[in-house]
Image (cartoon, rainbow, N blue to C red; front, side, top):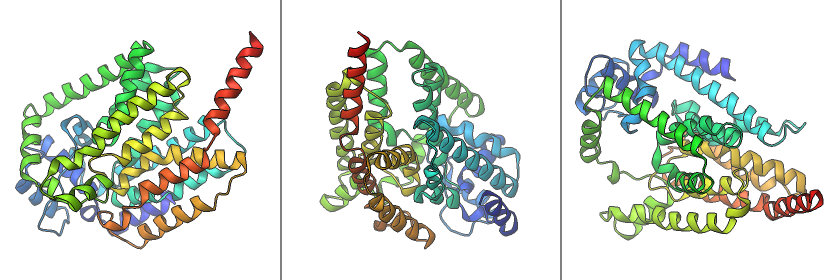
Length: 370
C-alpha cells in the first residue's frame, strides 16, 4: 500500500492539490526569512508549485509546530511531498505496532485494521499531520510508566494541535502533579522550550504573525463538522464563544472523572475514554484529526474479542466512514458530524464493564500477595 501511494505521488506530482502544500510553503518562507503565515505571499508560492485555487492553504498550527515545516524549505514540492508521505507512513506503522504491544501482543492480526481506519486514510490522502499527533499519543501511552521523560516530551506533538487535547492535557498535568511525576513534567517543559527556542531562531516574530493570521483569516467563520461548531451555527453563528462552551464543560467533566478514578487510574483504560471525549468537545476538528483515536478503537476491538462482543457495530461504523473517504466526500462537510459520537459509542459498548473487571482483578491479586 505504501509503495503504491508513493508511486502515485511521484507520477501525478500532485503536491499542489494536497494539504501538504501548506506545510511546504511555510517551510519555504522560513528558509528565506519571510512570514510563514502571510496569505498573499503564501498563495504565490503555492501557485508556483501547482496550486490551482484563489485562496491559499495556510499552516494554521501555532508557531511551536514550525519545527515540522522548516525542513521542507530545503526541498522541492515534489520531493518534499514524497518525504512527507514516507514520514507519515512510518508514523502509522510504528504507531500500530506499539498499539499492538500495548494490548499484550495478541496472536490475532486485528491490529491490521488500523491501516484501513477512515481518518488514517484521510490523512494519507490529504497529507495531513494527524498521524504525527497519533504517534505522540502512542508514545505517551507506551512510556508514561517506564520512561516518563520520554512520555512528556512526546506530548509536544499533541501541542501542535492543542485544541484537540484540552481535556487530555489538563488531566495529564493534574495527574503528574498529584503523583509527583516530575520527570514527565520535565520532559514536557524541555520539549516545549526547545520548540519555542527553535521558533525564535528561525522567525523571531512568529507569534505576532500567527496572531495576525488568526484575526484576519476568518477561521472561526468556517464550518467544521464537529459538535462544538454545530452548536454555534444552530444557536448563533456570530457568538463564537459558544464554540468553546463544550470544551469548558468537558474540562469540568474530565476533572470529575479523574477524581472518581484517581486511585486506580489507568491511561490504557480511563485515558482512552478521556481522549475520545477530548476530541468530541474540541472547538474545531476534522476527520483527519480523528486519527489520534486509533489507540482507543483498536483497544476496543481487542476487548470486544476477549469478551465475546460483536464486532459488527465497529465494522458498520468504520465501513461507512471509509466509504465516504474513498468516495471523496469533503471532510469539512456535515457528512462527518456523526463520526466522533459513533467512535465514542463503539468504545463504550466494547469496553463496558472491562475497566471495573480489571480493577477488581488487580485488587484480588493484591489481596492474595498480602
